[in-house]
Image (cartoon, rainbow, N blue to C red; front, side, top):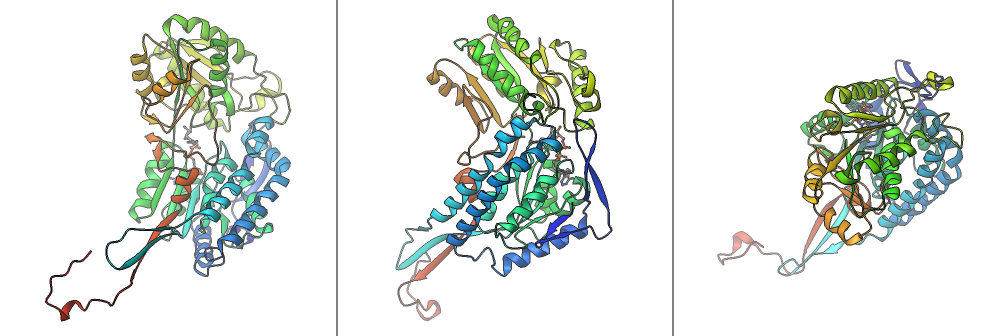
Length: 493
Ligand code: TXE
C-alpha cells in the first residue's frame, strides 16, 4: 500500500517499504511505503494548499455537513472489510473490532452536526460597538496515532478536525497503517477533496518525528506512550505548534464493599483484558476491601482462565495476541518484575504456546495478588493482559491508592449505591470515571487525561472547540474618534 497525499496513492521518493505482519501468525499481511521527511513535507504542502484555497475550509458548513455524512455512510458500508483488516493487523478479536468500528460513523455524523449547529457569539462590548466572536479552523493539523485502536483513535481526532474545516496529515502506527490508508481512500470516494486528509505511513522516529517537528502545522495531536508525548510536545512546542496528547494510563477499578461481587468480577475482567490489556484505560489496579479480596480474586480467576484465546478472526475468540514481539517482551519483563517484587500470581504468568498459539504473540491473562501500590507492576503502564489486585481497609485508603499513580486517565467504581459512587468519583483524579461500567465512550464525551496521561481533550463539544480558534470582530457603530485631534480624556475600552 502507498501513502495517500493530495488525493493520490504515492510511493516513497526513495522507494522504501516496510512489512506489516499479522501478530497472531507472524504472516506478512502487506508491504507498505515507508515515508520520511520528504513525504511528510509533501503531505503538509498539499494540506496547506488545500487549506489556503478554501476547497474545504471555506465550503459552506452545510456542504461539509453533507459530505461528512456521506463519508459516515461509506464507512458504514465498509465496516465488514475494515473490521477484518483491523483485526488482522492488531490481533484483536473480530468481535471486538466489529463492535468498536460500528461506532465510527456516529463520530462523523456527530461532529458534522456539531459544526452544522454551532452558533457564534456576540459579546457585551462596552460602547457603540458590535462585537462578535467566530470560531474558525486552525489550518493544517498533524495527527499521530497508535496501534491499539487505530481507526477509533484516529476518528476521535479526524472527525472534529474535518468538521471544523481543517486539513489533516496523519502518521498512523507502523504496526497498523493499513486501515488508515484505506480510510483515506474511502474519504476521497465520498467527496472529501484531495489534499484534505493525507496519510504518510512510516516509523515514529522518522516520519513521526518529521511531522511533529514541521513548523507548518497549526496543531499536533498524538495518542501514544507518555515518553513519546514528552518528546513530541517539546518538538512541536519549539515551533509554537499547539499540542494535544492522549497518553498512558493505569485505571483503578474500585470495588466498594456493597458491590455485587460477581458483577464487579465481570467488570474487572472486562476492564483488564479487553484488547489483551492494550488500552490506555485498562483496569490494571483492582482495589477491593481486604475482607472481600479472596472472594473477588476467585471469581476473577474463574473468568480469566475461561477466556478463549485464539485466532482473532474466529467468532468465538475472546482474547487475541499482543500486537508485537516488543509488547510480548514488555509483558514478560513486567511479570518477572512482579514476581521479584513479591506479588503472587493467581493465574496466567506465561506466554501461551499450545498449538497454533505458539506462532503468535499470545500471553495468558494474568492476575497478581498481594500487590502494594508502590510496586512497579502497580505503577507502570504494562499494556498487556496483566492486572493487579490491591486491598484497602477503608474508603480513605481506597482513594489514596486510587490516586497514588502518575497517570489520571480513567477509573471505575463498582457499587450498589449510585450516590456513593458519585461522591467517590469527586475524589478520584482522572479524566473519566465510570460507575458500574468501564471502557464506555461516546462522541459527545470529552476524553483526555490528568497528570501524566496527557493534555487537552478529544471528542465532545470541547474536542471540537480544540480544533478551532476564535476570531473576534469589533465594529464601530459611531463616527471613529480622531484620537490625536482631541484633548478630551478618552477611554480605550
Ligand atoms: O507507542 P508509541 P509504542 C504506550 C504503552 C506502550 C508504550 C509503547 O504503554 O507499551 O506506549 O508503545 C509514533 N516522534 N502506549 O512504542 O511509540 C509511533 O510511530 C513522533 C499507550 O508502540 O508512543 C506511533 O504512530 N512520533 C497508548 C505513535 O507515536 C513518534 C497507545 C504511538 O507510538 C515518535 C500506544 C517520535 N519520536 C502506546 N515515537 C495509548 N494511550 O493508548 C513514536 N511515534
